[in-house]
Amino acid sequence: MLMTEDEILDAIADGTIGALSIDTSIFYKYQFGLTTGYLKTLEQFKAKAFPFLMPDIVYKEIQKAMIELAKSSQRDVKNAFKEVKKNWTVSQAEFDQIANILYKEETPEVVVGNKLQSFIDATGLVIEKAEDHIAISKLFEMYFNSEAPFAENTTKKNEFPDASALLTLESWAQKNRKLVLVISKDEDWSEYCKTSVGLVCMNELTTALKLLQNQVGAYRFIERLTLGQYSEIVEQLLSELNSNDDVEFHVEADSQFSFDHEFDEVAYSAYIIENGVDAPIYLEPVEFTEDYITVKTTFSVKAEITSHFSFQKWDGIDKEYMPMGSTEVETVKDIYIDAVISFAFDVDSNLEIDSIEIISQSVNLYYGEIEPDWMNIREEHEY
Image (cartoon, rainbow, N blue to C red; front, side, top):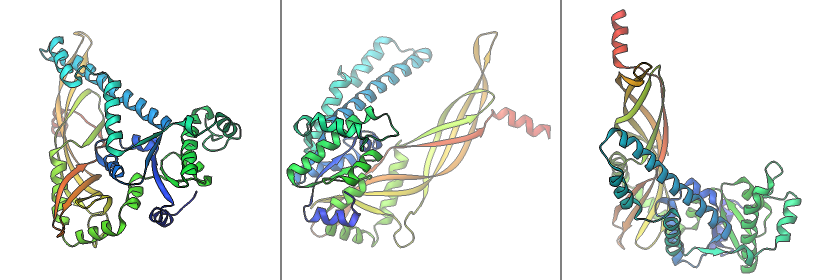
């Protein structure tokens, strides 16, 4: 069913929309951070008469993806240790001890299972089984008629999980005589929901959360915040950025030598406001209770980055890399930062920032052609 944001807001207010469901694509977007950021704010639904639903096939997709990520991180640690052993006096026994501290002798399957169960407990998530809602004949009918989500321009057999999930949610909607607000960035989900009688699709979780809040209370609080809280907010945002490694920089450069890279310093300053002079920082409520409000903000900063490059060249005679010097490169890059801020307040509306969480993200840096400092000195003398 197609609806505007205003229509969705009205449908939430009058109870026509009576449940929320989130597709796998949203969990990928937020890197499966179940206890941080926007996914953590889903805990608010446990205390509300507004079910948070998940088809069992979506749950299994999330579980599989998280297990693969856990295994991948283990492989990365093992590979990194191989490099450490080449350059440091560290034994396998010492690494095994470190690994035991990190993993506590638990398997990826157990760790992910515990994380997902904690998420279920915290959010009140209800797993809906496909077998309780749909018949296999309906799936095949959609498949052979190329109905969404079985698109003509894709490998249709890969869309069976999507079809199972959507039909499960549609069945729940019909049985409970409520619309389900579905959050997905998948175009096939969006296409299906356009003609669905029980599903309404949005592609941004933060927008949906905004509509699901106590609109009057949340936005009146935001209005009060515009009266002079910005300097403190920005100061703490910059402090949080400068004290943590929430932004991951990926470096690319060209050189006639092989090189290793590390950051000597990254400093953030000179915030640039996104929403004009009248509202110097944009705050969007995503959770609102009697004790606190959690907001999303996007802001821009200047990142001053100092990078150190060490160069090597392969010696075919001695069969080893020969050091070829080093250089430092400084650059300034404007980047956009997403953050979640929680404010605690009392009945007298006294405010204080309770916590700030920078949403992890990556930024690409390209330095062009680089070379050791001694080559620059030589070139200066040539002139």
